[in-house]
Length: 466
Image (tube, rainbow, N blue to C red; front, side):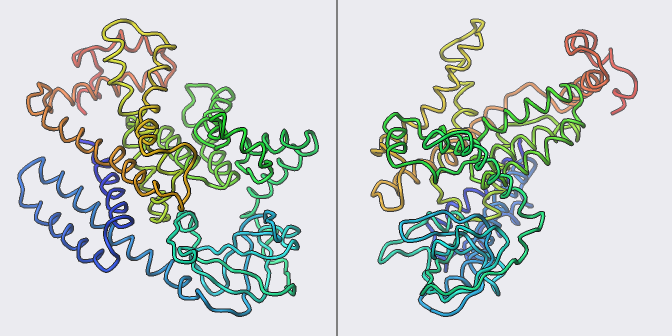
């Protein structure tokens, strides 16, 4: 049983329950019920004890964490909604132009947690991340627009909007020179270089692909990409992380795992911050980090566990991210790849030898199945919080990513009752794999290691002892 996957998926399901179904006043009572169920699981025999304990603990922690995050992060900012006064703010990124000036994400002085989007004059475009601005502003709750509830701001960790009143503002240097802002400076340097080499939408398109910043695209270019169904290529995701990993492996060699991991981890983290840490690139970065770290800790990489752990870390940083459409589509498509691809390969290819082309087609079809499920709601373009079908799509994504995989795992556990694999046999397999893995790490070819050690009797004594 995948213990980490069971816990993280339960945590994600609990966050979804808190965001979509349970009112805030019921979060702690329901969390207490789940925790009590987890405690009672200690009375259950064998494997069921672990299952119920992991699932109950994950659900309880999720509901409790959602309540605590809302109380400690969102509530202090939301309490300022409707008020007006002088505020001192630190820029967290470069400002982008709007029809009436500019907007930028800031940190409000005196409120250490949560972010604010400030709408002000065009002078904000001349500032750098880390600089400060003090101005007269009016605050508004980011979760409410007139009488409607919206989620696009809160899903990004923004819980308050600040509208500048008047043209007077005082700007300061703040921490502009701090290494904390190096990723933002690197992204701006890349954008400036691209702009110097290319013009118009060509420059904006390249900047969007490299850094994830689509603010430079014209409305005509956005419309053309949308009509052609190519808007998704602008999203920074696993493809970009794959390019970086390929480059690093070419430089270090495929068998130098520790060196590759030592180089890849800081590079991937830096690139994630450079591109704005969108859900798709954070997911890809975390999954690659898990894959790199698994051999270092003598563990096998498990894609479902890696995917669920990535979702767990994102929701731990901001539970309101569960309402993000990009997060739902990103994880839903990846879950489709991991869950449906093997089944479709067996169904379409059977026992026949399959080439790379066939496997790629089946993998693409797996992600398409998830997309088709979404289109049944009537989705033609990426939705916003104002579209009437957004709640329906949220439900579909929750069912596809949470409910169906959990049912599949339950069916797998039931089917394993009649499985012939014993604990002793599993230890033998692990010992053989450990011996082969160490030999490959020492320079032996994988094919030679597979041929040399096939049974427990062929292993050196130190592996038999383990």
